[in-house]
Length: 202
Image 1 (tube, rainbow, N blue to C red):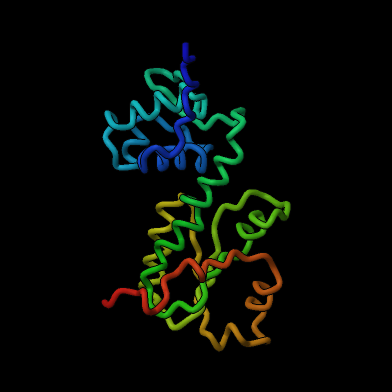
Image 2: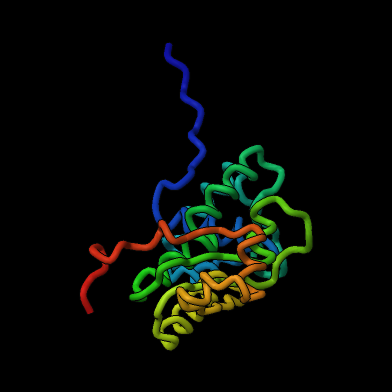
């Protein structure tokens, strides 16, 4: 007689599940409830409820009774916690969000994350970053730049600070900030942007 197969850990069966896990794993300090996740993801509670049940059963997330609500968190004791967090960070963390929000801005030649976020990403010790510094090199409309930063900030949940530099400033050896950025860890998102031939016409 064939034995029953062990249940498969339910990872990324749907976009909703991936975004649910991203909220829980990447913003783990927040006390999530079904209602707050529904508002955050724009998904009906009736859709989220079975996803949450499966993730709790798989022990990827925990549910704690607090008053009349169930508070949900990522489970740091699960063996998949660290690799799953890294995958989610790559897919839905600042890199993916910033790339998406800045992708439609014409004129960007370089897009870099610098400062404490890039330093922690490179493994340099230090306090947990409370904001994300972005360097945009190119001839870019400032209104579009700040609008993209505001959208990214809302999605990531922490301030996104854009710095705009012309190509001449980027090449200048005398600019102290540019020298500092070039000498420290950065996350280069330039390759994530569409090429000019891929950019849709306005």
